[in-house]
Amino acid sequence: MDLHKLWKSVLAEIELSVSKATFQTHFRASELTSFADGVATIGFTSPLMRTLVETRYYSLVKSVLDHHTKQNTSLVFAIVARKTTLDPSTAGPLFSQSELSQPEVSIAAIARRLHIRPESNFDSFAVSTTNQMAYAAATAVAKNPGTAYNPLFFYGRTGVGKTHLMHAVANKLLASRPNMRIVYCMGEEFLNEIVEAIQTKSARQFKQKYRSAQLLLVDDVQFIAGKQTAQEEFFHTFNAVHREGGQVILTSDRPPSEISRLEDRLRSRFEGGLTVDVAAPDFELRVAIINIKAQGLGLAVPADSAQLIAANITDTRAMEGFLRRLTTEIATKGTIVTPDLVSQLLSLKSPAGGTPIIDTKSNRRVSPQEVLDSVANYFGLKITALKGPKRDRPIARPRQIFMYLARTELGLTHEDIGGVLGGRDHTTVMHGVETITQELSTNIRLREAVEGIKQKVFHLSTN
Image 1 (cartoon, one colour):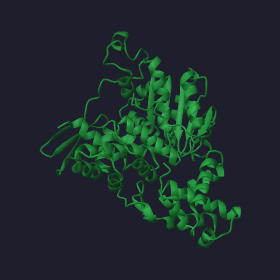
Image 2 (cartoon, rainbow, N blue to C red):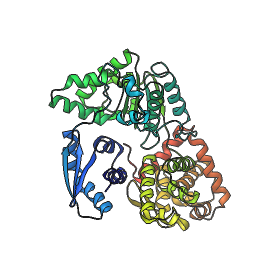
Image 3 (spheres, one colour):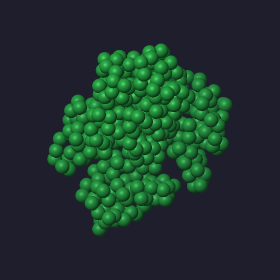
Image 4 (cartoon, rainbow, N blue to C red):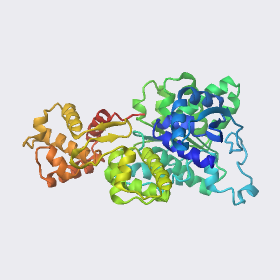
């Protein structure tokens, strides 16, 4: 049994069930060390992470592992020795020149040891009007780290590409500077490491690791807000890195001004560089992302199947997890990707005729009527007004928003959407969808309205 391949499949499914922060912090460094007689031993290098996963996610891990092994498994959580890794706390080179000359020490290997995803590069990032500014800022930082925008602060909801851009900068710099001291962590991980450093009396090593970074990458930095010790240490870390000309890149689900309980001195530093809003990908961009990720996995996804996935998964990380699951399904059954197979894995029926669609984040079915009700409630309108003949802007704009959501989130045809709205012509619906799509990249209020409705009707997480 290939333990690495099995655990990779298990993690791909777990990734669909937990938040990004939880997956990165709790599961990223785990490994399946043995599997015999129905007993799976899962290793962690951190005692804290082992305890957290065992107490909080035992049932989830067992359920997924049972599904993949077709056995009733028992789990053992163990501590394993840390592998030889790149240690950013050292002042000297991470690799000697003789080591770097060895073919097995590739840039991809270096990236993985730093917990940077080598596949997350600028070439594999799909660009549209929703993320063009963020892409331009990231490429500028990759060319001139520490001088272009410092810090570079990306914010937006989960799965819009913030982490991808962050890792793309790291990969670009590693290509020319493989000995660069890079530190990447989640905000929650930074907090957990502080707790562990205090418990193990290793605060000096912790400080040396972070403060010596030439490139400091912190994902979901909002998690340190309200934690006095974490904020104190991060303040000094930020100052030390910035003072020495190091580049800092941060991501959050909201701008610094809206992170509650964030110390003013940190907020001031976060806003001292460039803050970029990374908007959610529209339907067309999601299709493009699926095609790029599928190509990277060597998976052939026909256009109709890609569109079905894009209509039901709005989170790019969830898309990748679903594609991995689809790859496993294809290999197991020896079949090809079809809309029927995609629908089966999504637990969907055909979207034709307005059949309720399941939202993969909340695992609940959403009907066109629910979306229509949410749009009406958001704008304080009656359903009859949205379905009626009036074309006044206070009614026409919410109507177009429904058209956009029904098309991009539910995957309904233009004809079906017209039917829900009292028999409107499909060309009217096409115009409405195109209007909202084009304006979302520049109209902040419109984007807030669309996201607000989506958060409510689809119960999407904001973390």
